[in-house]
Each structure stands twice: as C-alpha cells, then as structure tokens.
Image 1 (cartoon, rainbow, N blue to C red):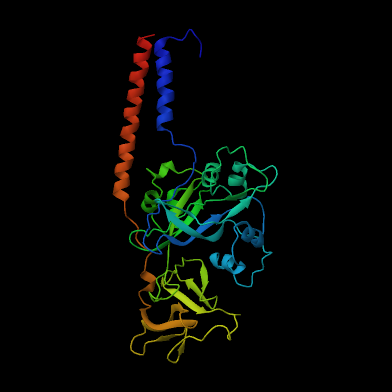
Image 2: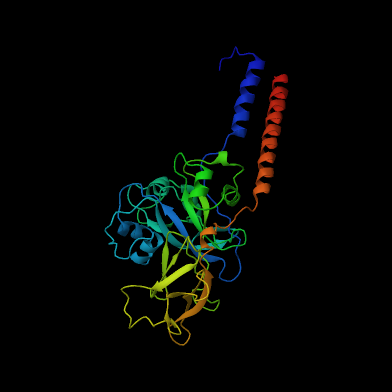
Length: 373
C-alpha cells in the first residue's frame, strides 16, 4: 500500500479485508465435546477414539501409546480376531476404547493417555505428530498447567486430554466416537459412513452448517449401540457396543458383538477361556447364545441371551430367554437422530445476519476515522 492511495481506496481495502476476516471460518482449534451427564455412573463411560498413526506402526505400539490394559481390548474395539498377534500392523484409523469423564459440561479421556517428554519434543509436535491431531498443544498445556508451551522438561509426564462424551443422543444411549476429519471429507459422507444424520453431526459439534467442516477438525460422531437384555442390577449394566466391534465382559468369559441386522447384542462364551474359571450360563436346557425358532411362527425366535454378571456372593453369569421377530429385522433402520436440525437452521441464518451487521459497523468506523484524519 502506497502513501498516494486516496482515502476512498483505503476504505475499500480495509472494508474488504475486515469483512473477509469476519465471515471466514476459523482455523482448526481445540475441540470441546459437550457432556452434561451428571447422574451417578452417567458422568463416566467408555468412548471410542479414531487414531490414524502418522507412520506405520504395530498394534503393540498403539496399545503402549494409549496405555491400554490388554491387547484383547484393542482387538475387540476393531472387530479383529482374538488370534491377531500384537506385532500385526495397525490399521488406520484404529479404534481405541478409552474411559471418558464428564465435568463442567465437557468430556475428556480420564487419566489416559499420558506422554513422557523426550529430547526435542514440543507440545505441538506431540499433539499433531504423536497423537495425530486428536488434541491441540493448547489442550495439553491447559490440562497440565503449562504456562509457557515453550518451556517443557525432558522426562515430564503429560496428560493428553482427548475430547469425548457420555451424553445420550435423541434420548438414546450411544458410543461417542472422536473422529479427525480427513481431507476431502463432507458432513454427508461422514453421517452416511457412521449411520447417523447430517443434522445430528452438526448439532453435536455446534457447527452452523456443513460448509464449515475443515480437514483436521475433531468431530464428535455418535455410534448407535445395540440394545441388550442385561439386567439393571448387573455389574456391566451400562455395556454399550456399536456395530463393527465387540467387547469382552464378565471377566473376559463373555464376548458380545453388535449385529447391524437385528441391532441386538449377540453374546457368546469366549473361545479359549478356561471353563473351570468361567461359570456355565444356561436358560433351562439352552446354553447361552443358543436360539430356537418358534414351532408356531417361522418369524419368531427365542434365544438364551446374556443378562450380565454379578459378584456379590460369587461370580455368576446371568442369562434370560428373549423372544424376537426375525422377519422385521431387515426393515429396521438406524436410530433417527433429527434433534436440533431446525434450531441449527435458525442459528445459521442468525450468523449470516451477524456477519452483515459486523461488516456495516466496520464500514461506519472506517469512514468516521478517515473523516477525522
């Protein structure tokens, strides 16, 4: 810009720059997942995190990075066979199950993962390089009371607060999935991939519209969980399993998977676990996981379903007979999650008017300033 530029030209340039700045989307910043669950046990849950290793690595290395208690847990989260060795290459992205704690209206992974600083590390390199953008360096600094991100010591242990949530969606329990948006992705494609709706993704992430999606953005994506017959008094009564994964429960004696065909939890005795350690579970003459078809209706089936486990007096695996209709299973659709769609259309309109008003104020201030020069 030269000193000879006339005031009207200066006004035009300033107005254009300031209006673009006011209307342009912000860069990818720290993600804060809403989590208002406060009831007993509701403020904690098991959430899933999508980890895309920046370099080729193994399942064992990922388990060590996130301090997972068992190799089996990592296999279960990704639907991999229990025979898969720890030295196997880690797929990308890899689902990592972590404990989530809600506090102050937001959720973060509880105590794990942690990271010990090495020579040459920076908070930004740890956030983007080691943990693949699941957090920002500001997240790490705030969680560990680091006042100056440039002053960290080798050997210092840091808590990595990955965002998560335990809240139900549209009144239904879900497993929240922390997902880093890859380049070229869209809200519509993400919603389709994870059997939810655009409106739900926008609402959960407080996005004004689908156009505001950015590569590298950390999204809260709800995964529908299968319903179950687990008793409200069982130790694992809050067990939630989404499609594409399974979980080991009852001291690893029971393997429960989620069927996208019936959306019912399908639990079987875990193969390879000693029968002397795991108590037998039966419904009369039927063993756990057995199914029979009704003699009067080919559409009706009765199953010996897993109902949880107790350990008050002795380790006991519970089971109940459940009846379901198999003919209507194919017509079952994923859970409708249309909540807040109209509210977000209104929010989008409100934001556009706000941007216009800001631009008009900028023009007024610029003209007033130049008139007094």
